[in-house]
Length: 277
Image 1 (cartoon, rainbow, N blue to C red):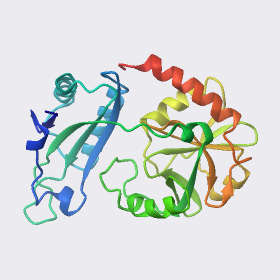
Image 2 (cartoon, rainbow, N blue to C red):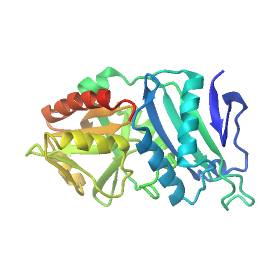
Image 3 (spheres, rainbow, N blue to C red):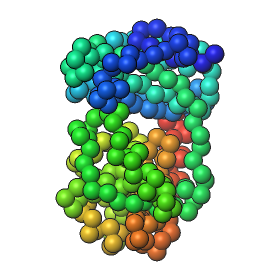
Image 4 (cartoon, rainbow, N blue to C red):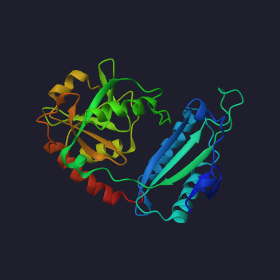
């Protein structure tokens, strides 16, 4: 039987529940974070747990467990379930609300999930995106509200795209679940600095890239995409993934570029050395 964490206990997952009056259900008010295991070892555990606690603080959601308590209990959960190469999802809800709007006592749950590998063709040949003008609420917080991303998924798939690139008032921001980068004509790597969730893999990919390329964190305008030589995204399951088309516009020559391919190789090596951090 798969176990999960509910508040301060490890229990059978099929016995865990959230109250029907919880703001997570009524108003999509809550936060989460997700990291993966290599074997049974967490990848970038402290980065994800720190962001989880920061998101909770920003949304004024007191967590039932402190940092060290939650970390220790998650490690116990991993041992209990013994699911190698799986994922850990930490969720903190707005709690059972007395009036459907005020924050109640938050509910914490942690799930241990199987991860379905993404198609290798996405890494080898790149992916297509559609674009949509939208800015997430409180973008620096990893909230549970994915309404727009899920709503746009059917449209993306209908044209052979796999995800949506958000932009706002002419500036590129992020994907529904990933960070976005372009490579300019000087082989510089550019990524938006503001109005985004600064992903854990974004942070580590930038660290790797700076040893080999110039990296600039600045505004990227939609009009710049047509001049980009390459584009790629980063994420927990996507690592470094090439983008070869946005809407009807090919990026560069429509194939993964040399900078992206090199960074993919470097980042895979980095991830192997980062297991357990």
